[in-house]
Image (cartoon, rainbow, N blue to C red):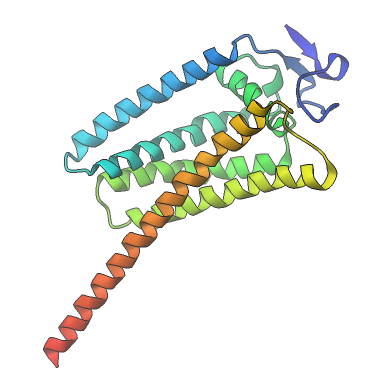
Length: 235
């Protein structure tokens, strides 16, 4: 049943926040059902991706197979889930689609997603149009053992890391500086949703960036040794 946010209220902080569209429809799915359905969809996507990657390149190392899974998963989340937010942010609070209900559940840890926050609209639009497609490209470059793999992997991972730090920083700075909280006080929303979920986009991109730096260093070292060896032969 739809309720008018300005008249009856909603569960989001800060109190009195005006939701985009002015109408709030409570979720009909419970939290466990949402998580299970989302997890099931991700599992099917990862299974299909792994089968495709192994068929396309049977010699692909296990570590690279895992990175292919990561980049396909994060690319899908960026383009489709976050893309849904960008396309529907003005009416998200009143919708009852699966993605809308996922966003309303997540917004309990960051209500900016339901208020058409300018910063989130900008950073999510960039994520959808740049980092999403480049994530898919990176997965392809890994499967094909392309020499462009590590430059793109480093670029995408740096983008993820930088964007996530800004995302954390803008929310926490407002809390620290003015006491304006966008997350509910329950621990599961701050530590589970806000910190836990988003930290994934710090830990894995951090590894990917380190991996690309290491491999790039090896390539330059090998090229220098080969160049020095050729020079010695000429001398």
